[in-house]
Length: 165
Image (cartoon, rainbow, N blue to C red; front, side):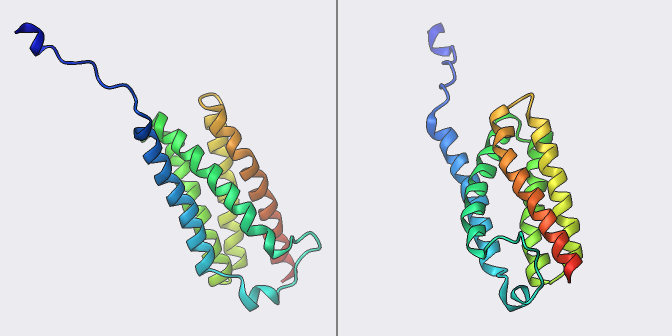
């Protein structure tokens, strides 16, 4: 009878308990990115702007952002798994909000200067997340390195467009 009152050991971590949250992160980030992109298209206004010689062709943005959004989702999921309410998770959430804010500010509101402020804040937050994660989760930090590089490039591009227009 006494053995019946002993609590069993908690179940081992099941793969599905990790996969479902990862799928949620992927849907949030990739889906959110696609939705933001689809509702804030460059359009004629952007086509008529003066652009620097290093402006990439429009077709490259979709594939690059898709890969980056997958990396962002995985890094966020890893931070959340480690500490759902910790500073890395908070930084990850802030960068996502800034990321999603940039396209409407730039393309829909046509505020090139304000978009530059947003993207520089985004760059700072991406770097802060990377630095914060480096000692705790190198994989999550390394997933943000190409993202930081792309956002740095996009910041320079945004600044150049502002100067030319």
